[in-house]
Image (cartoon, rainbow, N blue to C red; front, side):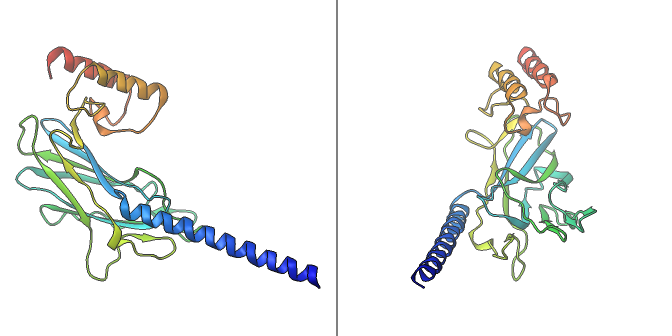
Length: 247
């Protein structure tokens, strides 16, 4: 009898310990999510256009929805196209993946992007760092170099609408942190070819692309010097040509 009770107590203790560890892990993830930069944007420009990517860091949480409003100055930019990352954000019945509602670009100066991850056969969320939400291409109205513009991000919808929802049903709209796109020193947008993002095009940028091709790593739009949608040896040649011509 004593042995049986001892075993039951041990099992209860282990269950409580597991629950405590899970609670601590989840709480830590929420604290990191609340304190970190959850939604941020990077960009690369030429005299003619600006391409930006919107990313999300989940800090270990599994997300099933995201909603972002992109605010830009219509005196500086006009929208060419908005591409959501439908490779991971989709509604699936287990056999076919269907994209969520298309981006809303009807109001000048704003883009609304709503994303969802629903798999009816295998429920799961999106997790990780640098999770791509969308690509946006703008036409520049002012062709001055270097450019001066700001793009801000905020929640897509207000009121009763839930923008950022974790797989356990928790709504994270009140703790989300948004970045913005800034130009100039210390900004997060660079001229195409400024592969290392230090504000100038130099031999180190060609070296940065070569390092990426050999070793891998994070992809940044600024590394795509010739704007062909790929990072390869042609971008090294593009950077070296800019160095020769001062372009």
